[in-house]
Image (cartoon, rainbow, N blue to C red; front, side, top):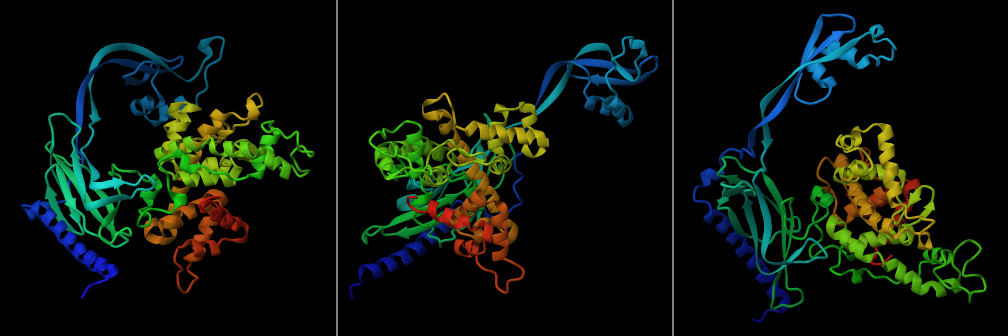
Length: 551
């Protein structure tokens, strides 16, 4: 009996899945000469440091009360200048420390009238001390063989059996990786410095593999993990099979995903995400030709459009562009909305925030006019004070990158949360000012350099919002965000957080999974959006507009 193509494919897939599962087991255990070794204690992790002897000058200080001869305290420091309050606390105790930091500077004309404590440098001597430093630890890189990346997503397409490659990296000279160990579904494996593991076909949830590298230094790397999903398809050709492989791991060396997606633990749909959550390989694929009325009106006001043929000057009484103005501005509107595409693509590749999402966001927020729409909403993505606060608080790497540009780096090292209220306000306002492209002396009144710079700021702001949205999901579920909601829905929750704020999203999540519900609802966009409070429901249309292929 001859089977139809669909039945043939089903049987081939079952047989292939079984054979790949067996092949994976064989590849693992063939590399495990002594299973007991892999079932030993937890790896020690990195344990390496070096000690260096350095020369320095030792300073000897005495502390007196003004007008008295008795030495109250002796202080030894290893730096120039007066002893720090910390030096005084350690060598003199809390009581003298409190007096020292509380006393006011002496401003008497006659210093003999001064009261309180003073310091006197007694001696200096050359000295040596040992300084320890942490050495770089071993690590493991994760790659795939027999696969090509899809640059619109994190998915790789393989035309033969996908091979997961774990490569141990030892950064110290004279040492090497002696083995890689790990666990697959609780089963141990061990292999040399490079592991090649044939991957089985999985369900849509994938599986988690743990792994670590052992070094001849005598320690190991930390324990890493990777969430892996393998799907098989004939892609419309019944005579040929393809494998779609997604890998989510901090050690993944292929096409990256946004950092918050890794924190979510959420894989994109099999075969890649929808277009609005993708990044094309070429900026031309971001091109649009939308007749934006607000943008047309701004270009007409700026003098970029010849509207002499329009009896109404191209503008309506309410400030919008008239039909004549829209027609006159069509070419300028198209050119303007696409001029940022190259920067959007570059930023998307650097941050892994989907390029189409960024372009759609700017279209909805500002119609690509990077000026000030009102006193509280600034730039292409209409950043607010609360939005700046979210970006700086929930994206620490971005804060540490931006803060030293506007504030002393020593203060920035404290982290945003530990700055004073005034310092936080200063950094927020500096961030908003950095993306305000309004410029009276610039052509058309717009500073395009600032507009281009702002695209990166908005991408990092989006990463901050997806971190916060993921945390809100974890708060109500007690598990990882990726276990509770899909990849696409988590991005939609992120847009609610960006547009309406964490209060709106948090309350909707609580209402979806609430103690007063007889049966918890699943955290889908449909359920969560239906539970948004009335004041927050404008976010529904906002999300729907951005998640379309074109706004």
